[in-house]
Length: 83
Image (cartoon, rainbow, N blue to C red):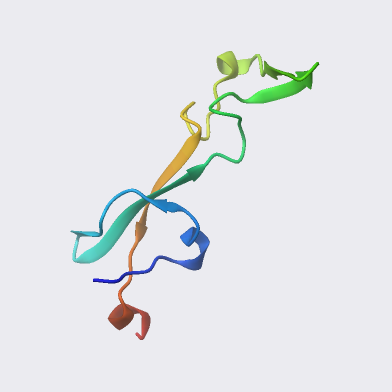
């Protein structure tokens, strides 16, 4: 079955096949974090070396240090899109 996500998540990587929850179809998607570099929250760059932010040991709080953001979003079929 072919399915789509909202245009906001069109370029995100799909991690799972669609699954049903509370009678609606969902899929898990992920993309690279836009706030960090491989999970390290960068304060500055010195001599081509990344200097992590001193707060929280330099760990990015948006992605919890993984470097990727994952979300559970709605998946739609062609039938759902015409409603």
